Length: 159
Image (cartoon, rainbow, N blue to C red; front, top):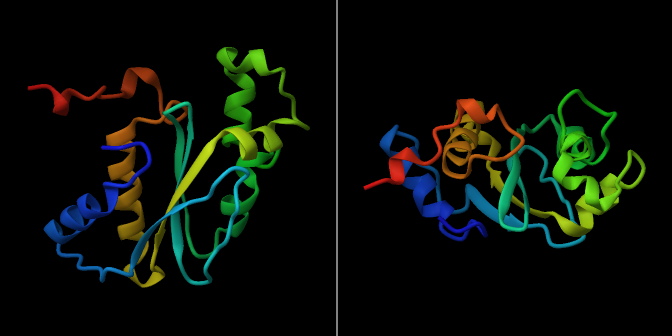
């Protein structure tokens, strides 16, 4: 599976169909947010967002139709929530080389971290959103999600 998520949509549709969820072609969209990130939120829709740096997934999460702060700002400001990308980067010893702090990490993320979102029609419901997020966690094992000891580490890809 490509890190640009170009192949994710057909896989998501296959898995969703396997559990009797049949979205139309327009119900799920993959949106590359560019650098710096250009964010837009369609009222009534939900999102699975991904953050990648140098080809590695750092964080994958979801924002429901009523979670606009989570979508727009919380991951860019370390003090906004208990768990967010900015805080994870600041606590990561590998990232110390960038000399980031609470005031600079948000802009650094917007300019240096790739953000690709999966936009999900809100009519598909929260369980569909949760399933898409879980599929993407399994596929990409983001660095700042869960604990290293909890990861499967791609055993399903071994032949």
